[in-house]
Length: 342
Image (cartoon, rainbow, N blue to C red):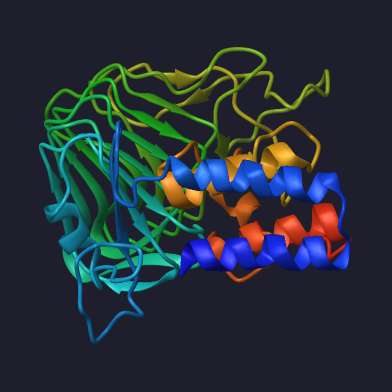
C-alpha cells in the first residue's frame, strides 16, 4: 500500500506536468524503495507504537503498531528504534539494559503521563536515546539508575511532584535541549555520586528548585559561546549583549558546580526549524525528499534539527503523507509546507 501511494503520486505528477524531471524523481523514489527492508535494517529494527491502534493486531510493524510504549520497548533489541506516534500514553515505562532509541513524533503532542506513579520513565543500564516527548505527572519524571551514556534531548519534562530528572549512580549522560518546568526540582543528583553528566541548553522554569547537585561533579554548560542553560531564577546581567550572563549561576547544594555561561533567553531549537528542510541545508529540494523517504520507510537519519520539520502537512505525524505532500510541492507547485510544524 505504501509503495502504491508513492507510485501513484509519481504517475499523477507525470500526467499533470510531464517531462524528464518528474521521471527522474520517480526513479529516485523507486530506487529508494528497492533498498527498503520494511522492518529490519543494518542498524537495527524500527518498532512502531500508536495509541490509536486499540483493537489490534499488534506486531510493532508500521501497519500494526503496538498500542503501548512498553510493549515496543520490550520487543526491542540493542540498536533498534522505537518510534511513537503522537498521542497520550498513560504508562510507567522501564528501559532496562537496552541501547535503543525511543523517539516521539512531536514533543508537544507525544505525551507520556505517569498517572501519579513513582516514576514516569525509569532507565537502568544500557545507553538509550530519548527524544521528542512530554514526560509528566510522576513522582519523578525520569529516573536514571546506574546508567551511562544515555541522552535525553528535546523533551518537555514537567509537572512531576518530586523532580523532573533524578540521577542515582549515573555518569556521562547527556541532558540537552529540554524544557524542564513545574516540577518539585528540575534536576536532582541523588544521595550517591553521579558525575561527568553534560547538562546544557535546557530551559528551567517554575520549578520549586531548579537543580540540586549534591556532592557530585557535573558539567552544566557547553563552554563559550555555546552557553549553558536558561534559569528562571538567574538575576545576572549581560553587559556585552552576547546572550550569556556575565556571572555564573551556582547550582544549589553542597558542591561547587556552576553553570559558567547561563543563557539570558530561552534556548529554542524551533527558531532554527524550517518545515520541509529535513536535511538542514536551508533549502527545500529533492534532497529533502530522499532524506524523508529514507527516514519514514527505511530507518534513515531523522529530520534535523527536530523530527517535526518533516511534518510538512501539519498533521502532527511524520509519515508517508508528508512524502507525497513534499513531492507535490517541489515538482508540481502544490501547497507549501506548513510554517508551524514545530
